[in-house]
Length: 134
Image (cartoon, rainbow, N blue to C red; front, side, top):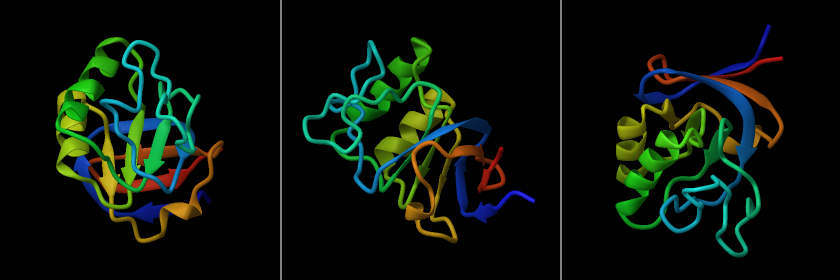
């Protein structure tokens, strides 16, 4: 049986994909290129990685409210994450996920360090769950 973790679902929907994990926050407005979906923030642990179709697992968002609209632009271009899992979601990430219809879960009953980039995850934003899938 797959391992499943429970948290608080903030934006409903189901998202599955390969995880992209960092203990850092992500600034979607300045740290992710809206045209390519690639993390461009210099020195960021995910620099050079593409968020498109991935389950992004990170501490939280960072940066200004423009990050919400950056998530929407990524979605319109087909480059949005499949889902986002935060240790502690902030208003910018939450609003962006609502606008872009990206499932969002936070405050899991495990630390986000449980997950590694390359894991395949299924996020259920309505149920507030994240599970490993094969």
